[in-house]
Length: 378
Image (tube, rainbow, N blue to C red; front, top):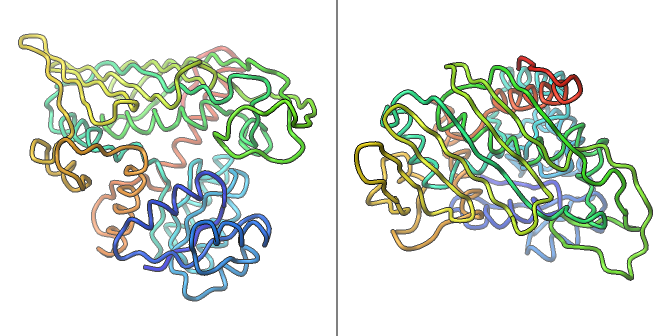
């Protein structure tokens, strides 16, 4: 399978590195926002082609599949044109900026013979797949509550800046849409339940940030004193709390923040049922806590010899050999390309366009709830 990547920022690098580690995949080239950025990225990443434009990438008959890692506002038009060009599409989340756009992408995907997916990679930590298999097989009993958080600190200061803080680039929501949707997708995928209504309380810590003269890559750090800046108004959320009702009556609570000092990339959940509970923390990604009422609790360390069939499919290293963030991308892409290879039979483990559409519907409900301070149906 021959693949091309659009987007030369943080996610473009992560996708490239993960794809390079997969057998049966050849990265043909990469395309950035300018021909110069394309050439710089191709040289830095050791790729053969630097496309001058998105149109030149799509015109390359050698390319069978496209990974879209550009800013959010470009996801919809690029996905439309990629499907029209007959390419398979793996899109970074969010799938689009609005549900009108994402619904159209669902329609186009169903009408095409191409495989499409959204990169909710956190599903693919082996212990999260193990939690899914245990929950879906009834080991937890009837799930009644889900609790957790997703916290970072890379936007703590008013001098921290990235295109993601701008509503016209990211969308109306930021902390919820950027990282909170990862948490929601994960717990939905584990439990098999959908969020049906939501109550949101959101806050913008820095209504004005200092924008540098020139762009800053995601996670590149605090601006130096020598950088020239200008004030820019910010309306997207820095942190907030969500209350959720799931379709089986389960109660959910999530705190999301990109301004919590010391939390670099910490996703945590507790899922409790009538027979047992599971707990995960992405900063200790090879460990799954198992809770019981009538016997001692357990810690399950990632080990394919101790896992169920689902987790074993997406585990490459034996017990005692850690697998983490970068491996979750590789495993998501493995699921995507194995699904293509199978002819698209069965239910995919990666997130579909339909699931990407559901996450945008959830974000629109969150935004309405935050404005009106009431429960909103998803």
